[in-house]
Length: 496
Image 1 (cartoon, helix red, strand yellow):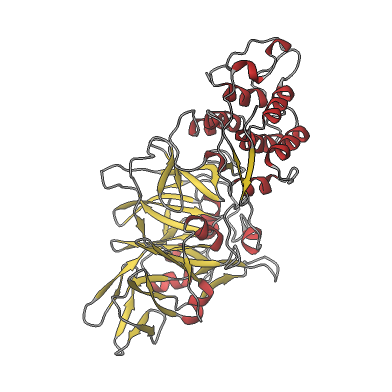
Image 2 (tube, one colour):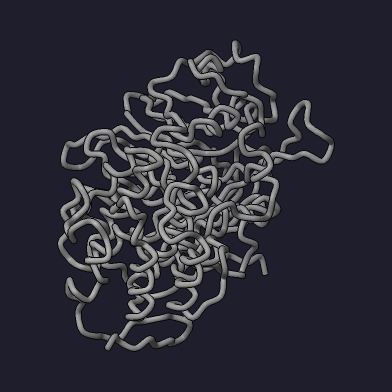
């Protein structure tokens, strides 16, 4: 007799029941093949073999035994197969696996889960992300093999037995192949005065290290999402998740002397891109700079964030007249126009991929500037920061000052309709204030302390009138849903 299904607080759990054995799977004699593992996979656990049967890894002259396998799963009420069926529903929709067919897989999924989402795959993914369910043994290798039908590179990322610190069940295909969104490696750059393709008000990522400054226009970054570059002698990767609205710069070097370059895996986790390093092909969380699947999991490696700001091209040039900027001749054939790649997504209030963990404290795609200090995290709505211009606060026990004196950044792209906008957040920098209180200064590049002393806003520090230096803090500009996904204990700053 199978274990019982219990629903507690919206989470579906499977109580313990007797383990499957080979004869409990199905009547193998009904098919013209022996009950041996699929080629090159070697699974031996009966539940593992059953997954491969469900995904048509046992082709026979008499057809697929997937329907009989599906009946076995339902009969035994084995909820470990809920994530398997969610994968198969998507595989049916993408025509990469037929198995028992979409209708049969959906019916089995609804029977096992007690939910009625039909063929609404995003709803299944979001629901599953809020449960404590676990997949059968061998699920990672099976999923890698299934995704490998789209691109063999996915199978390399998800071999059987690979270390993982996230639920592999929640790793999703993002609609492109490995490096289908190609990184820019040491791209060609231009002096500012030669970059005639840029509008003064359009958004750029700005990075300044060791006295050297460079701008990375979003009209180009939207198409590439990753740059491996060197500025001021520091090798870094600018990892940009368009889905999350977050561009984060990481030092490629680790404390133990390792160095990595990165590409886009084509896979997602909770609507955030999973980047991969080219040295070990481990998958990394773009938001935290940590390896989450692969050989580097458990090593304690976490990339160091570097200061990056989103601002207008004109404002960046005024602050850094010596800056260089990406050459629009990248070597790739892309429509490098502002908003051409993701303009509709940026303008929409909706997310594109499933987001299992949500908070209604803010709209999902409201822009926030997130700060973490120790175990404390705070999300600052960019609209609030822009209206205040200078915000004094405390994160945990650390006094901070956030400077947003140039307001929010919204652009109407050339050639687009009057209602078309490209919203990119705003120019925000945060500093450890040491308890000093600041207010806006006479121009966007300065702030005043409580005594009227004038401080200069720079990329590395807030510079005081007597040579004081208040260190820059590396925050993240992103959509609210993304910040909350990875910092669920965050507080939200209120102007009240």
